[in-house]
Every structure is written in structure tokens, then in C-alpha cells.
Length: 279
Image (cartoon, rainbow, N blue to C red):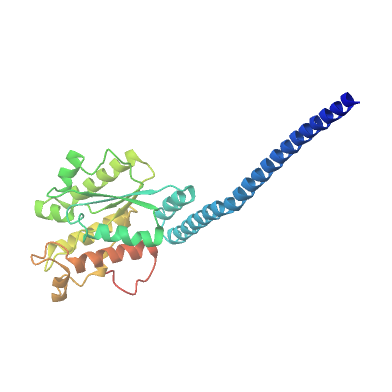
């Protein structure tokens, strides 16, 4: 009888242990599922936040590209096609500005133009500035100074050293030949390069120089080069008001002159009638 009671007690204890074990295993499994469910729910809550940021960035990029395309679409050919191709492919336009002097520095018109263009085109244009001082167009061509090894430009804005040629007494026919040679050099690098030609700055009281600029414009038009005549945004070079646009020696644009120069070019690239002068 006593042995039967002992056996019954042992069986009850063993059953309790087994039941407790299964209860504990189920509790652990249940807790693990709750933790996993909590982690998944947490991740699901965070995922939309990241997605919204990415979507906003993509929307901003799309809007920026659309705005750049709208401005590019009003440009004259072949500049329009060149810029639009870069915008649609998400690439930058390598824009090279070449001239004789006054191109560098925070207050110089190329820097002003670059900063203002970002407001319309974003990062569509990547600017490169090449200032070549105290050289005639003949010297530039002979030494290949107009070409850069580090970049192949898509667009070139060229001031073909008219002032230096004026001082250096380079004949007009030679000047035009030099311009063609410079342009051919760019085309050898990139046959699709778009050439823009602009005059050097006006000179106060000059007589022969304005006629040389007129000849340059006719040459550019005959050769089907885009000619950007920023002189139309300056006072007449014989007017006293002109002195407000240049340095004391009248040989360099001052802040007013640089702004006038940049403003003309910005209006060309954007098509906007700018009501207020660039500050």
C-alpha cells in the first residue's frame, strides 16, 4: 500500500515537471513572437519616413530638371539642343569662359553670372574660367593657350582678345583667322561644341575700336556663330555716364559694369526681363 502511494506521488511530481517545462517553452516562444512582431511593426513604422524623404528628393530633382528644361527650351539653336540633351540625361554642361582680363575675382562678371544662373538652372552648368592676360589672339593660337587639358567643354563663351589685338596692331583678317583656328581647336576636342562669341568691354571715348567690334559682329553672324552683344546693356562709350561703369583708368569694369555685363548674359540664358539690376 505504502509503495503504491510513493509511486503515485512520484508520478504526480514528474507530471508537474513535464507540464511546467512545456508551459515555459510555450511562454518563451510566445514572448519571442511578440518581440519579433514588435520589431517588424517598428520597422514598418520607420520605412515610410525614409521613403518619404527619398520621394521628396526625387520630386525636387524632377522639378529642378523641368525648370532647367523650360529655360533651356527658349535658347537659340544649337545651344538649346546641347543644354536640353544634358538636362534630360542628368549630366552637367561644361561651360568654359575665355577672355583676356577681368574674368576672375568675386566681383567679376563670370562669378556673378555663375551664382545667378544657379537660381534658374540649378547645377546644370559647370563653369570653368580661363583668363589669358597680355596676349594677342595670334600669341594665343601659336601657344594653344585657349585649350585646357583637364576639360573638354560643351559650350565656350569666347572674347577673342579684341582689346589686346587692338593694342598689338593685329590686322583684322588675321584676327578672324585666329578666331577660326581657336574654334577649330575646340571642335577637335568635341565636334559638338557650341561656340558663343562676345566682344571685349567697351572703351571710353574710343574711335577705331568700336568699328572693330562691329566687324567682329558681322564676322560672327556670317560664320553662324552666336554673338552676345553685351554692349547694349552699357551706356554709349562716349557718354559721361559710361564712366560710372568702369574703373578710374577706364580700362576695367567696376562693380556697376560687371553687373551690367552679367545681367545681359543672364537675360540671354534665361529669357527673363530682369526688372531689378543684379545686386
